Length: 179
Image (cartoon, rainbow, N blue to C red; front, side, top):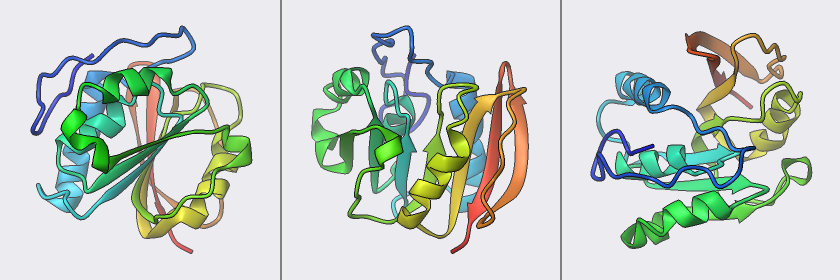
């Protein structure tokens, strides 16, 4: 696992400490960031990321490397992201790590432009987590939801499907949020 672009391109990250953590592949992250560039251009400095089920933190750290203003990362087990975050000591002011179970969604101080969510596959967590996160999203926020390619879930009514793409065993769903 490594950072695929930006300031820290090529920097290696620690692999998951737990078998329960399934990081988004380098290939998928690269494709997602190419899509983000097509939507926002090359300047991400105005964007804030909310990364739910962050695991190793690879997506959040990629966002920081590629110039996002900040990233908030949430997971029940933050040991993997904490280990990887230590590799970026000069970026600590742009990265917030929160240990929380999304069923009791934490109170957040910011609103976010991008949501990335990679829940454990086939555990029916996507719809309820999107509803819980919606209070912290800016109108028009781009939501990126990674699921197993055969997993079905219902987008809440205030989320509009943009497109879906398959990468290996993963499906990436892009949706926009409106309140």
